[in-house]
Image (cartoon, rainbow over all chains, first blue to last red; front, top):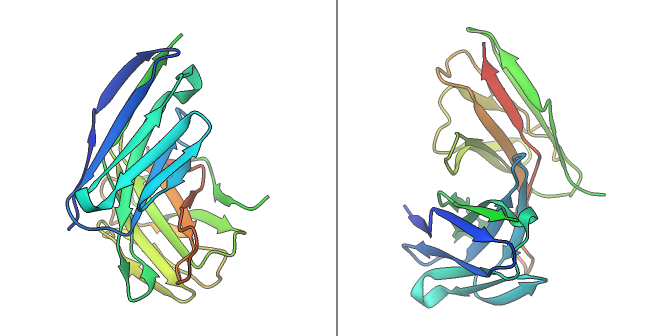
Length: 112
Length: 116
């Protein structure tokens, strides 16, 4: 099956710093999503980004499908950005969406 | 507002007991999923359903059962056969079928199950 590797596993930042999180995947995919899990466990979908670049405020993501990686950029980090960031990928089969396969996540701690 | 509601937030199970976790969505999504998360780990798929009255086993289905009698609802039963059920359980939904739509998943807020 598809393997999803995220790096780094842990990241500590000072408030205001920028960061880049990486997701590598082992096979061609046509669905890639980034999620943020807050300290209470709620998972929020940040980006649906099978290819290309998207931006949403201080967050942006780029997926290079041909090279099998995706990057999540966090600029001017805030303490509320703390939590775990997951990358997940899937394939489509016969016109319907396949199941997401999750990486182990990057745990981000932003210090005031 | 549309979303996914999971209940209860916290659940305690005695040895040998079956318990059922509720998941309801009002997003008109076709597909629904149950994931299990253990501390410091990613999410592992338990069961999924692409359409009403049909569901499939995921990677760790043993000791669990589901039903999909309505599009909006996808309850998960943790049976006594599940030997290590203490975990955080997350339900999700998404569009399943074709077209140029955003297939982003929406997750519920989760249920923490503890065996006592």
